[in-house]
Image (cartoon, rainbow, N blue to C red; front, side):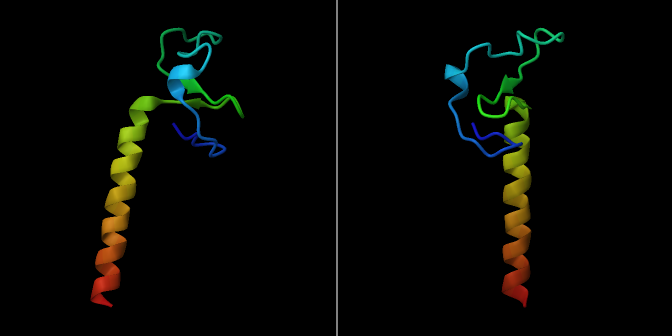
Length: 66
C-alpha cells in the first residue's frame, strides 16, 4: 500500500494495530501509515486506481488528437 498523505510504501498486512484499534471509531478498515500515521482506507485504493487509469486514458486520447 502507498500512503496517500506522504507517499511511503508499506505492506498493510504487516502493520501493527491495523484497523484503527487506537482510535475511537473501532471497526473501520483504515490502515495507518507507519511513517506519518495517516489513516489510509484500502477500499478507496480501487477507486483511486480507476480514477487514475481513466485520467491517463483521457490524457492519452487528447495527445493523439493534437
